[in-house]
Structures are given as C-alpha cells and as structure tokens.
Length: 96
Image (cartoon, rainbow, N blue to C red; front, side, top):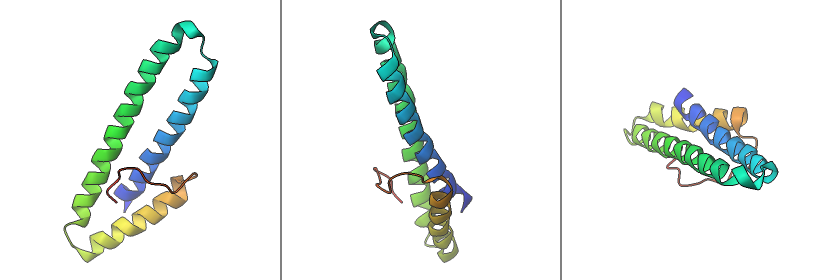
C-alpha cells in the first residue's frame, strides 16, 4: 500500500517541479534561459523515468494475482491521491 501511495507522491513532485520550472523560465533573463531550460529538461526526464519505472513495478506487483496485493495497490492509490493528489486526476503513461 505504501508503494502505491509513494507513486502518487512522485507524480505530485513532478507536477510541482514543472510548475516551479515554468515560473523560473518566465522570470529568467535571456542569457541564462537556455542553460536553465536544459537543466529543467534533464530533471523532468529523470522524474519521468522514475515515475515510469515505479508504475511498471506496481503493475508487476498487481500481476501476481494475489488478491491482498491487488487490494493493497488499489487502496494505496486511494490513500496516495488523498494525501498527495492536489491537482488533476488525468493520468500519463502510467500502468496502474
């Protein structure tokens, strides 16, 4: 259950980073904008990689077809969204 709730925390951290990065890009001077954009791309790519790895790991847990694990994944998603999901419910390429 904690693993699935943690996945929701990673998703929320990614969303918050994107918002902060967009604000930084708006206020950055033109001379440093390109370097800041490159840094932001690398961090966003790393967060995306973690998110995809995490979602595939949860999918593999679910595919054990153990009823208790399946319930824990569902309940963990519920608890994680309550704790960390402050924005849209729209999903990306996640597997759960």
